Image (cartoon, rainbow over all chains, first blue to last red; front, side, top):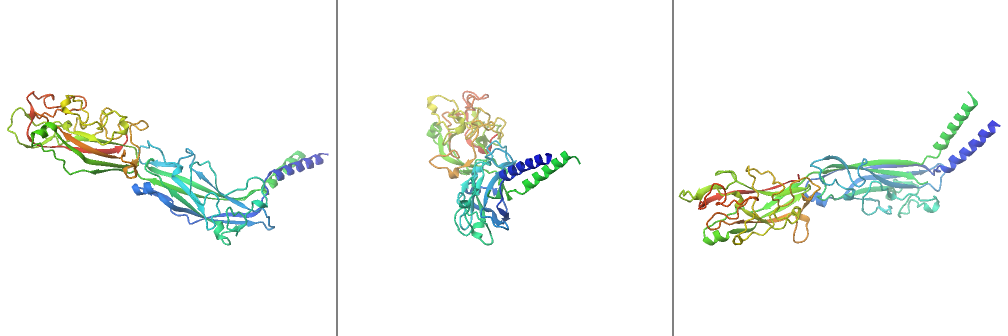
Length: 208
Length: 260
């Protein structure tokens, strides 16, 4: 009798676990960070403050998404970006040190604009420069699936259209699986002088 | 091992299997950037090397001489700032007075060579935004007409009693900004005249200068912000005093500093 109870409990538990947890569809996902340049931006005269950096590549991302040994037609992925300012006010940069009395305003995220481009312009929302404004916002470079994943959500590699998220890699489909991350920075002359930082966290996930 | 222990162990193993089998695949990379915003605090000044006031006709003594827009001040700054002018000299007659370079006179006891620095009047092209319209806190008032008989000292240059260049107090004049910590209306925000639009800018000022000796030459407009300093009123002189003819010099120091 006790054995029977154990078996029943295990069956209920197994059903619960396997039903509630996401089912994985892909064999592997890999995000490579390539060509990361010198990411220190110096502003020391009128031209640099007011002109800023019109376009600066801060990273080149390369993506590889492989299917499982037994292919799953729902294997797909998304690419998001989150900002990290070490917990200061959500719309400011992290302060490292100040050069003056710091009586003014520390620079805001809005001095940045970002875009993520490739040859096929696959990013729906970030193929053009978009201003940053809050570290709590998740920037969907390639959109995650919303709702129940089905085949209509998959845009296969090679189509060279927006939001390609099917299986593939930067070797076979360079134009869709490589992203150049560009920043535009225009601080203006109203913010506190000092050194400030911001971290960009790129995340590649399989869709579930 | 007891049966209950076996049961717990079994459940733990099952949980591990269930969890591990369903992990979502994720990969992450980070990129950090640093901004180095170096301070810029820059005052551009366009002005003659020497601004001369030559009083060689009687009407110049009476009406005074005004040099319009003789100095142009342009500010570029990435920090909050204040701008003020201070009248200074080497003090070769006394601290707070013009330097006498040449004496044309004959040593008449009524001829006074101590001309107060405050006889120089300034007028700035637009009001100090931090003065909130109070013309006792900037140089935006029109030059007063001496014939009106009111000598309130509306435009006299700030002079530090000790002869140095320390900033004016809260009751004295600034061209832009004012004494005090930020977060009040006592500072000018960072910015530059280079990107201003329209016909006026808080980062661009022209300065007019006036000297009015009067007749007799007692400099009736001289005022230190509290008291008149014309040559008759000022302490040691007599009612028959007048300015000793000669060549006098002083200098105006324009100081742009981070708000404090």
